[in-house]
Image 1 (cartoon, one colour):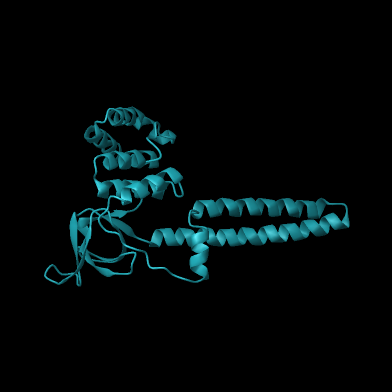
Image 2 (spheres, rainbow, N blue to C red):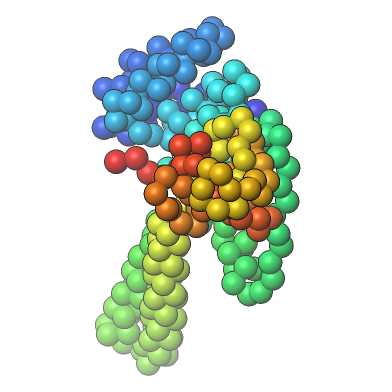
Length: 250
């Protein structure tokens, strides 16, 4: 694992949890991982959700050899801090503890190429880029209106037009990214051995089995069942109680 621990909570709203966070870190450094996990979980139970707590909790469960909660907490940390290299690195280590080795089905096309190119960018990143381009467009407009030379005015108009266009494009990507992140539902399997059913019925035939730590996509919900899909395209039904959904806590 590349990073050991976050030593402090970044956000001011979480400073009240800093003493317990420090206590959990002390447990961790003393290799008292069970006590550390309880302390980190206590912070989350109090409603203080942060990438730092989830990351350290993921590290703790990794040390305990508990693959499902380790993967889940790293995924939660990554949800709050998209693109963070330390979180992604430790998540990769935790995923190596899984029994299932599911290969992702390759896709082709311009949309997939574009998604791979900007994989680590979320809607906040695109929104910031859109704001920068819009500000640049305003600067260009200012030079256009107040410039004294014809060439300066012409170039300023062209610059402002391109900046405005790029701002619109970035804003569009921000909206698409936001819609995509809110519509996609994923979960981590917590059951040690989970039969995936062909239908949402306990007595239906087992289509296949998956194991703790495997990440699945939730396609739909029916009563107490989730219709799930694996990275290789296989689909089936599992009890919702056997997986834990990766979503922002409120």
